[in-house]
View 1 (cartoon, rainbow, N blue to C red):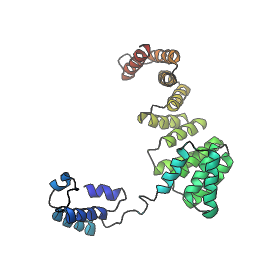
View 2: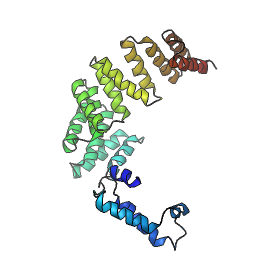
View 3: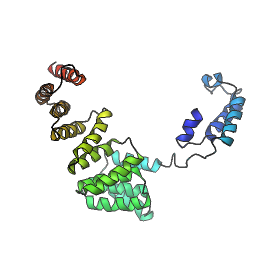
View 4: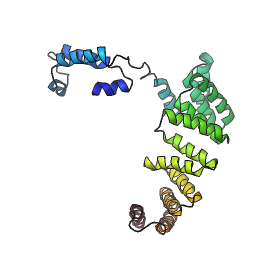
Length: 271
């Protein structure tokens, strides 16, 4: 079963075979192999079994790109550092002078341009990157966000939905799909995406605010007050939080689970 998970994730099943061969070679001579590895069935038996599986069932080679995203990880780490955006801009431009088709440098440049308020330039750079990597979820998501910022809502929704189709677990994609559909006036869809964030149990004031506003627009006032309460609690504004929690209680049945949550929130703020 373990090898099936590895192969489905894109790793090479042959790595398991190679590891077992190394164990077999040194198990009688080395004390550095953890003892728990030696408590399993005989290494020879497992090696033969894995070899047979590789020849018959798991014949596909592992993806070359398991570590291929290292450049993207490095790019994101650089963007996450408290580095100067102007320095990052020059850094990515220098890479692109030598390698105009470097997708990660194009992505880094586009994100940096967006941060510096150069949103139109950012969108142009994202387009170049997307032509080279049309199914890159990071590019699709952040290009969608840039489109949203420019009021290009239909394009934003299309890009963000493409990103969601590739990565169904990205919080920013859910957030901006919610915002985009809210701006388009499609409140049911907007709420659906905000609720996806709610399911992730994110302790994020921006999410609370968006949920509060969206629920208010569809006249679900109990939910709206509840999320405003969480929002103001997160902001450290106790009086405002208490006001909204108490207002929420007027719309919630006393025996509902939500009522119990609100009661706990009120009690925690009164301590």
